[in-house]
Image 1: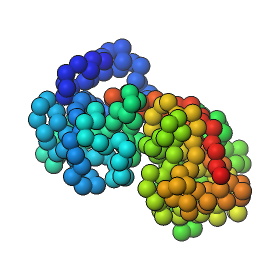
Image 2: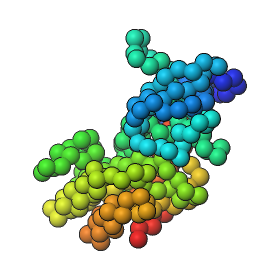
Image 3: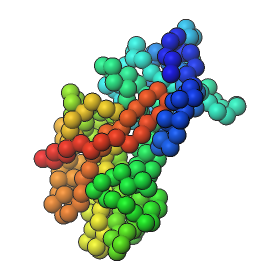
Image 4: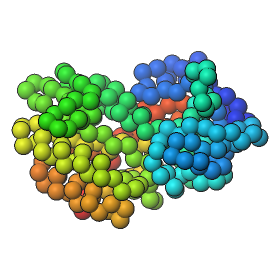
Length: 253
């Protein structure tokens, strides 16, 4: 791939197209830009080829440590004519490491990993379903295999302090609720997993961000004591793709 020229479109060449085949999350044409400022939760201004224009942000989180003026960013060109924005911001370069910020990517990436048996702690699964309702809860995945059954909740991670990946980057009552609901399901014989997908490489461990959200960190610790498995994997990120990576050690409390 060539990355020369700010805003120059980048498309996978023939060799890269073969290499990317089967990857979990591939983007279309991408361009490089310079972050200017955030307009609101959903939009920002980015300089592309010397012109500042509004773009869609594929993540409504705070991302304060990533979306800073002057940061190099990568955007996916719209594939649909007539959209409000011509580009969607999908990744940010921080200290030379590319961080994918697409909040829709983690579930897509993890689904393919599960289907291919790449989540070693879960193994091969015969049945896999998305967005399954259990009681009053809706979990990201439900799986079955040889009498085993379980739910998996996926959380995308974009925050790193040093070589430690952390979640959340802002208080998350919704995240705490998901953890509690998953623990409740375990009482009915389900194998339940919380999987944190770190949307970058370079991290050597994962831990909950107790300083940002003590309730979430404490709840996660208690659910582990109730038998919930907490996993973390990093991801391989390029300017046009993100795919499942390697497991990271998890430290909780």
